[in-house]
Length: 255
Ligand code: G3H
Image (cartoon, rainbow, N blue to C red; front, side, top):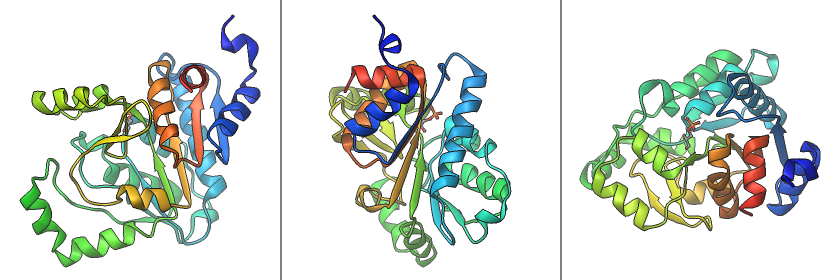
């Protein structure tokens, strides 16, 4: 029988929560890859989760992607958001403007009536450019500010899908595949065991910052992402997962 027949959604939430020692798991019914309304529901659930954990005067680092854009849509103005600042988790990762973390952070700030600060660094940074940029005092200041984030909100993608979407060159694609890349989150690529195998060179939150962040919220759904989500959960630094039923079944299957 299908897992769906064995578990109700609430049981699945508890099961995944226990498997990965998470604070909260939310599963919306359906498959957000197949249904626009499920995707909207996932966005609303992500927004509700962020609302649950946000405090006063928090710095909230957000990643990019279509799911994060849906979470932004699910947010509303309330006095609760006063004093909060949205920032991008990292600099450019090769996404189109609508999906960039800077864009998502500014929309979230606008939707909630809070403020934002942006990180302007070009995509596809070479080593030398990276070091030059890191010496700039304005960049240093905003990076230090981003590293104060108490909450990180991010999507999770299938590694090869994300690499293609970001127009990664053929050579790098082969390297990613050879390293066993399965999942991508906040510009880091993970293998099936949740080990980091590649990192897009840009600035902002480093892996060690994410590991230390008080509340890390992952929002990702769709059957094809299930295994990738499981890989990021195995990395072991998520606190909250917001997903859909189709992905949840795959997460359990790959756990
Ligand atoms: O890091 C993961 C990706 O940004 C997820 O993107 O929400 O468009 O699938 P997506």
